[in-house]
Length: 312
Ligand code: SF4
Image 1 (tube, rainbow, N blue to C red):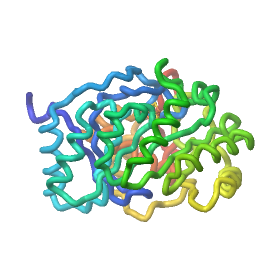
Image 2: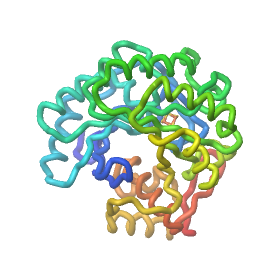
Image 3: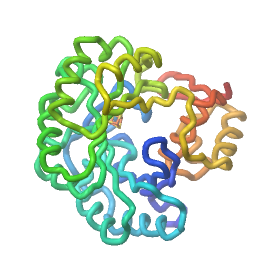
Image 4: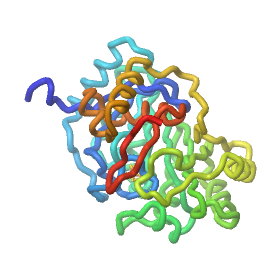
């Protein structure tokens, strides 16, 4: 395989409001997920599965992580996230344990919670320092409507799995809730969520809303006032992470922003067009597209099954 075609599992570090400079680790083929969320910024799930696999050689992933650390760039977190559900990678536990042998940089895992009902997955994530699980629905009806899960996954399995995980996990849990206008923001549902959250006992609850291009156009954001109201309802350990045009505390790379802007100015482009043109991982490009969207420098236009980025 030529160097040009070598698979890239590591991207960034990308500036993140929550995690500082985060080195992204993508261990799952694009859009392989247990869910097909209506708000997914990566588009529809093309491979919905609950079968855990080893799609890539762990030693190659580890060697790319080592190389990124040795480059001397500032890295505040090594973060498993990527193009689908990272716990679908059978080796994620081994990868986390191996990373811990060569660096003290904390390891975070962003997960959609769906596989935590399985003992082996809870065991795999146990060595992480921070787990950021998502939970958008406290009822089966809303879970099916928002997250469109694989038939074997239920809201109850997710909630029970998360509670069991909490019981044995020594690190921090920051629970993320994506709020969608007119779908999961009603006062009765917020009360149900509040009850479930009190049973899970995460260190933080982080509220987000759909301010980025969603898979389904009907997934709309809450206003900043409404999200503030829900934050107050959910209590002191709750914070808003939806960015609403606020800059993060970390500085994005000006060069990459400019390179993306010059492509967008030439013609409407998709995420994969930009990624292919600039030779950067889609998730890194996505992060920068979000900065440009927040700054109002570009806009997105859904067209047929794709999302195009254009100058604003
Ligand atoms: S869990 Fe994440 S990657 Fe999977 S469909 Fe939902 S938003 Fe997309």
